[in-house]
Image 1 (tube, rainbow, N blue to C red):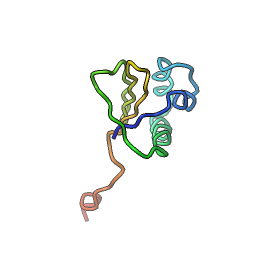
Image 2: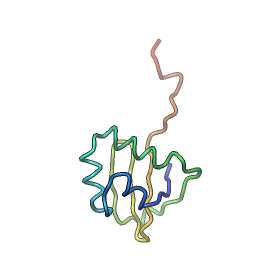
Image 3: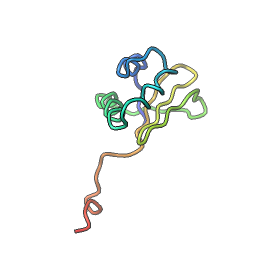
Image 4: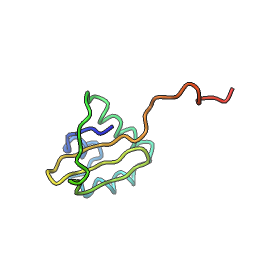
Length: 93
């Protein structure tokens, strides 16, 4: 799922002033905390957005998230893995 997020809010979460510094801030933060912050940023968003992947200017890839900024300065977070647990594969017993 891809979510359109407020770039200023995302920068404020990681305490940086520009998207260029965001990548360093994410990778200097423990991965579990980065994922927690990104999940928190998209948790209150109701709907997903369309992203034209031909219009991507910059990408930051994390374990289960991608962050995109397009040429119109819109910021998107893509959640790669769902939190839904398949009840049939959760356990072997």
